Length: 474
Image (cartoon, rainbow, N blue to C red; front, side, top):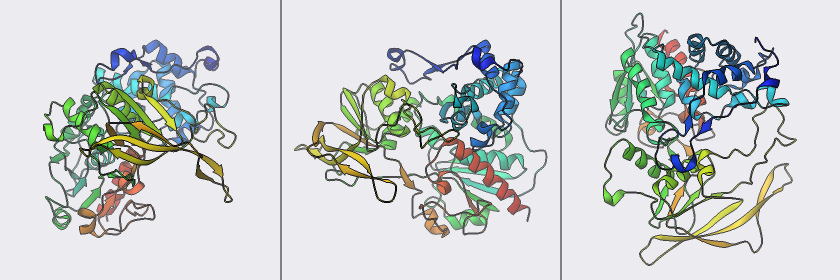
């Protein structure tokens, strides 16, 4: 780095969000672009460590100091190339990844870490603006055919890698548009869909074929798929939501988060929703059960739809503001991170256990009974939950959204037809090459790893592509 003490001169720059009152009126990107001069200063803050722990922490193995240095020098074209060196879709991680790399940045020991995610995102956006990002069709064809089931980040990353290796690649997607969770699970204010569409256009220009509206295992039998292709990759995600086993679960107005979020994304795409199936938070008291990213997405969407009130329940305690003694650097810091949605409004309650949902005479939810809990040390060195005496309370609600995560891939159908084995976590069991128990059938992303991050999905897709290529080469 030209300025080795820049971290002493320039403070860390965060993403600058649009005013809350403004962004609640639409579903557009909430963060604004950063001036090139500021970005160059942020790149200078990098120490270019002898052991770059940011690189070690990244599931993709991105060599982050290299693009920090290139941004600092103002060499945007090479910086754009560097962010693509180990990542097919750096704009997806730039928008959605919690930045595991920043949690391990050496500056984080005593200073604020480098704004790595910001530099990554702005470098790729500069690349699109300047026309540096172009399709890369294969130089030769192998004649081998690969089917990819699922068009989320894992499936798309694998498809692009396999196509560039020279294979014929067809991506099957059961929805009407490709993109998977990126399309129908992530709100537009976190990832506007033209960002996804421009990547899909690149894949199509490279020769990847997309077949939408095909539910493999229902519309197309698994055996037929295996007969028509030399290898199959399962990348359908962990779509089995964790349910709430309490009295009143069957009441009207109680829905899984993805039902709610996907419907709003369809509205944003111009689709019409049948009135009988329409879900909206407008004029309602919304309860979101679950404090993760999906729960936060429900909060932001509910506020934009005009909810009267939004409350979130989280079973676990509120994280600390700073690292605790048992969470040292370079571990991922388990600290409080208010999402942009929680900054926009609503109430967030920790250490709350839902006990019962109450309904009215029409069978619609109208309130929730809950109790406060605390977490105490157990004999095994962990923590156990116990109910706080006399802490039960009732909260009125008209719409309950279950955002408690996912338990793994949907059983039956395709997986049953293929006869593939599961691991102890309920995901698909794979070997080091990402092959399942059935030869020629591979798995990647949440389907084999379990519910995880977009950066892990891309890494899994790339790893599966390598395994499939080795298998096809004999």
